[in-house]
Length: 62
Image 1 (cartoon, rainbow, N blue to C red):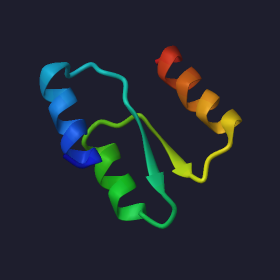
Image 2 (cartoon, one colour; image 1 turned 180 degrees about the vertical axis):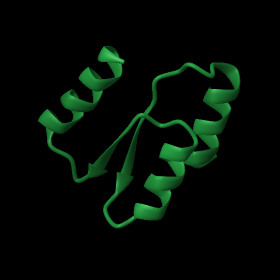
Image 3 (cartoon, rainbow, N blue to C red; image 1 turned 30 degrees about the vertical axis):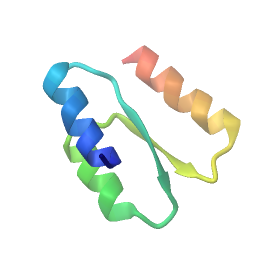
Image 4 (cartoon, rainbow, N blue to C red; image 1 turned 120 degrees about the vertical axis):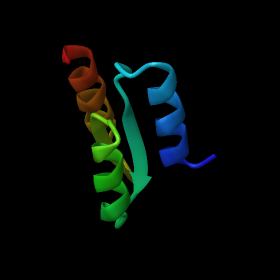
């Protein structure tokens, strides 16, 4: 199962799930698709720890 499939599965079980995804650089089409499908944030690899914390904080604040 890839990330978009996992996103769909999670959202089918919990439509209100707060989801941040991790992706490789240069996959803008996948990022946009995931946002449309309900992802709340994206962290691009290679990632900095402060960016991961910012994504988690965004999810907790929502």
